[in-house]
View 1: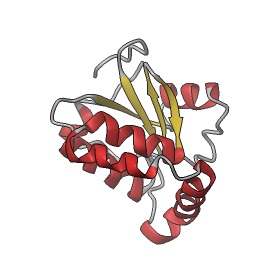
View 2: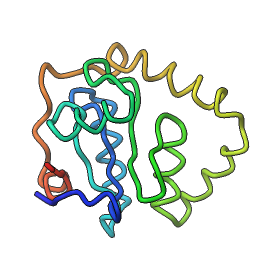
View 3: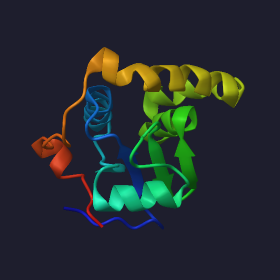
View 4: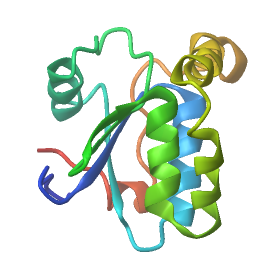
Length: 139
C-alpha cells in the first residue's frame, strides 16, 4: 500500500462503512486515471488520527476530508477541490464556488445526515476492490 506524504499527496478520508461514500470513491477512481488522489477510510488508524487532528470525530463521521498540499478541505469545499484536482470537464464544478459555503454545505450535510438511511451501510469497513487497494494508504 502506498505511503502518505502530506507535502505532495492528495488524501481523501472517507466513511468506509457508507455505501454512498464507497460509491463516490469508486466514481472518483474511474475518473482519476493519473492517480492524483489517494484514499484512507476514516475508520483506519491513519484515518482516525488525521480526522481527529482536523477537529472531527471519527466515531461520527459527517464529512469527507480532503488533505492536500494546498490545505484541508471538508464538505462541499472537498467536493469542489476534488473536481479541481480531476481537471478536464470536472473543473466546471467551480461555478458553484461563488455560492455561499453555508448554502453549499446545507445541501451537503442534508445528504450526509441521511446517507445511511437512503444508501445503507456495512457493519465494518468494506474490503477494497483491487483498484482502490492500490491507492489506499496506511501511514
